[in-house]
Image 1 (cartoon, rainbow, N blue to C red):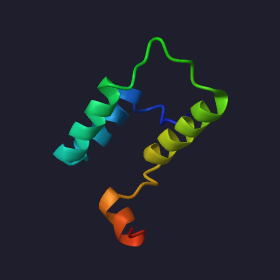
Image 2: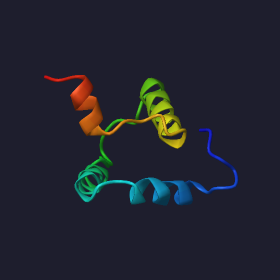
Image 3: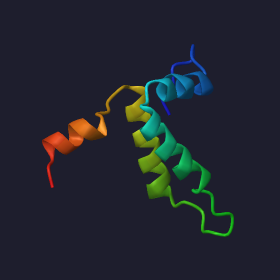
Image 4: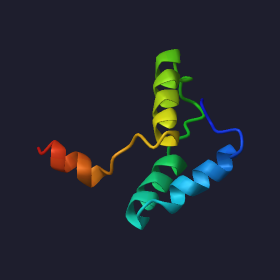
Length: 75
């Protein structure tokens, strides 16, 4: 993953978290707390690669808010 070496991963996560609205942060926290399935199968390479791409997009600030996405792609 293309993290800036001057900034640690935890520092980058803190920066991203500080930029979240409370509601979004609460949703993400819930997802993280309920994501672990110790008895489930390991992630396959395609899923890990997708997660790496997503994290790289976040690090490079190539993201849009949910509101902006929904405005561009109404149901």
